[in-house]
Image 1 (cartoon, rainbow, N blue to C red):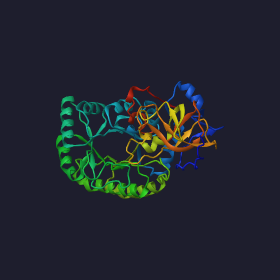
Image 2 (image 1 turned 90 degrees about the horizontal axis):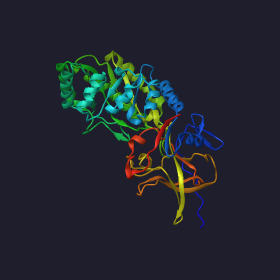
Image 3 (image 1 turned 90 degrees about the vertical axis):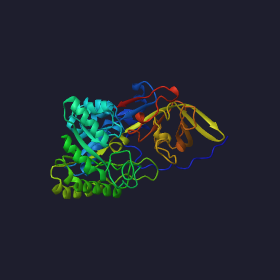
Image 4 (image 1 turned 45 degrees about the vertical axis):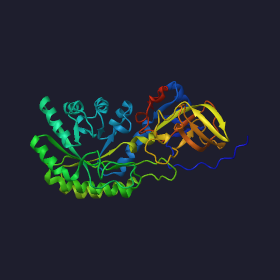
Length: 415
């Protein structure tokens, strides 16, 4: 059977920042085939500490010097990654008590850790109070629960109010503010909540305003940051004490798909610097914080899986690999995509090879949803070759149904 020649592969923006030597991808100066032998199995996730470090350094150069950068651990809570990030960022933001345990195992002081989420259990709240972590209050009921736990423990909680603003982050992948949302307290209800915090005598820290995520448009992020700072200023007269911490969220996206353009962080940083200068006179004690997850770690990770079969079905080539959606739900297109698009993919031991063929890459699961690449032109691969999914450092393993169909587990490594 004669198969048609593939068209040139579509260009993914900023496909990877890893070294390639003699056609082989390297992480942490280790060739991919050697790394696979070191780990002892495929599939696996690998994260490069050099790429993580460089990303934070580049971000700091673009942002105002006084801005604090927090890592949102939900993007990637692997303990080794979090330990490394503790040396690079100014604080952590958590979404569970499980993440809090990982964070407290690092050198990061509890006073620089905050805990958000719309459904914190009473036990999680008491853990946060005991640890001295700032709790971002998401409802009036949660506030009363915190007060009861403080009374029981004989301790006073550090609290901030998570605000659901009337505005939203335009053009964001996931909107977490504006309209009716499960996140935070509607901005019009905040003055009453602030009065109650004062009456309860809790340690008021400030505000958390997170309006959206995965945004590549600098203008949208600048607009949301301006509105967040102004909202905090407007509410400051209602606060029981001076605002000490003002978390204006993040939303910085990374390019995944053909046509995506990397975020112009210098433009964002310049605009934020001007806004912070204006806000400083109104909120002189406020430490302004941005909270980033995907932007810090997403491009520093890859998912590696091995070709275990190659077959042709009615003129189409299928590479069957030993990993799939159970480890990497997002790459399969089943994690928020309306129309499935291919993540950047490579044949890790044949990088740059010009002998291309159009293939479908599918996992071992007995479901048609288990697709890692759909009709992609890639270097000609054979059984035993290593398929690499780039942009996999965030919302990969822990955002996937790894027990689905009882397949073997994957592993993670920081190089």
